[in-house]
Length: 418
Image (cartoon, rainbow, N blue to C red; front, side, top):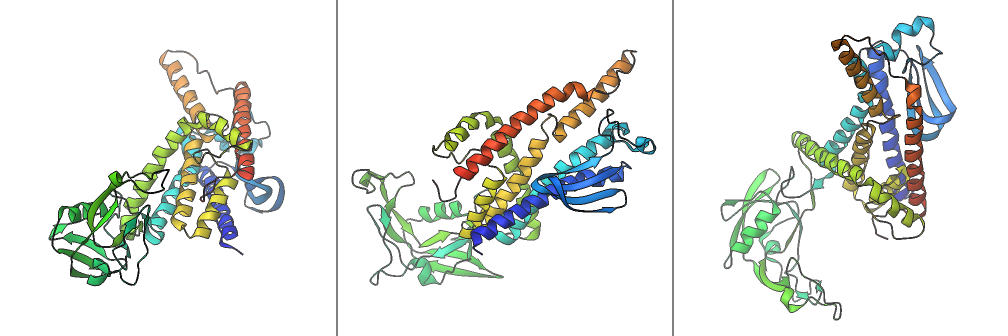
């Protein structure tokens, strides 16, 4: 079995675990508060397998498109409640208990997303970006020579090319530069700026290698290279002379990802969880403008990589990441999907969890205001009056889901581009 197929299977399994934990969050707290939970199922449609333990039936259904928990008395309008279970109905519970039960599934998505990011930071690697937890001047590769740049490419090392300064000094992949000429260095941009400021003579680098610290002295070599904002001439395919500069290099490349200690992983998990939260809210605000782009992609246009993806599309990307060995992308995508699902379920719309929370608190506030004004309690919200809105939400999101799914099948987003 190829890594692509294995990656798809692993990603799908990760999504299944997310669904199971989401529904388990609802169930665990409902049971803890004495509510009656009659069913806990993964999937929809015909039942493939089930068993009963206590008063709850657990099982798997044929269509793996989600899951559900059946809590007795979710609304006062349920008519099939056994009289002896009336006191255990969901709607009879105080609003704080209902809120916890409803938000427990969402919280499980957030916690799982954080744990996936912690695991990635500790065991797989997170981006070695300045300002991010764990960022450091860690060396990824050490060049065999000071590569020359001609036209639009760095030339491969030849037999007559002298060894690069870092290579000659004994630097290795995985070394972490902690100081240059006695000045502390905490990330790769700082290292680059410091080296650029030393315009002549040798430099002394303090290097951490495992548990030991050593001093390495080397003399950077001067090469001609492209500037940061260099362009390529469309006529000649070369970098114009105006976009070239002279600079001194030691012949190393930064490690693009780094791992951290389990304790540092907590900070990294929080950092990237916050970043994904911010990105998720931005994506939701931009969601309407993405729909026409999805439709264009379905009809054969170029797929915009910023458009939404379904579970199928995410699994395909996960499979490609596994095939390419980019496991940090695989786990970041899984964490992002969990956090997105949590945020999406917070929307105050039925049938989402956030919609049920909104109704519970609306009802509580309405009753409190009536009491303050000396008026009778208006009672429970009539869910039957909200059904047209609920059906409209289901229709809209269902249609978008089908559009996204179809586009992911016909014109999926790929790590390798269009």
